[in-house]
Image (cartoon, rainbow, N blue to C red; front, side, top):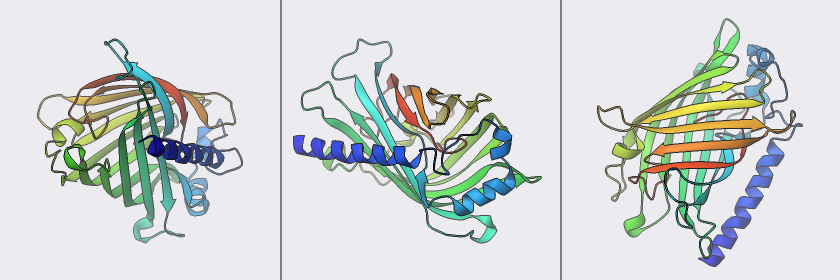
Length: 288
């Protein structure tokens, strides 16, 4: 276990360095303009979809540390949570209906650094492939629609094994240069023998909103994931981020998670966690 943890730490460190290099000011993935109207221009967006590097960021990439809310912090319930999320454009030009084919990969890890041997207790793997289509109205970029075939599992066997598959449909709509709303619904294919009830905890759809300040230094977001059933039972994620330097894509980051399904291993266990750290964000608005 110690050797595995050491190897994973080396891989993660290298990945974080690579992600930082991707988001330096010299790349097209970096937001350096303080005028959202300029980056929402349809011609610039089309050029960006066509000419941006094939490899880039997908969801937020973060490294955060924290403890439960309402309980005494201990070595067992205080941990690091980090997420690495990337995308690879598989087509050089647009496909029919103005779509682009992408390969997506997100990995989320829970790391109990205060315990002996610092075990990584839950590793969640989420690869997918899908089509994304930029949306324009009156020559203005307003967001994108997507359909993704995705798999999520924790790479374990025996009683600790968790897995499911989804065909996800969703979109992001920019209703103002500073506000984006998004939604995602999925057709689940639950193949994990030990998580047949995962929809009761990890949900059947999600909706949310993200807000940027005018100078794009500050952002806040709310994500609600509806658990199966007719009751108003949602998993809630609230995030705040502040960009440290004007021309860098690194933010101070605070995340509050309340509900079930935060990780695959303990998907049916309630968590209320507050963590702080650093986040690297994709261009324009984040994906969820």
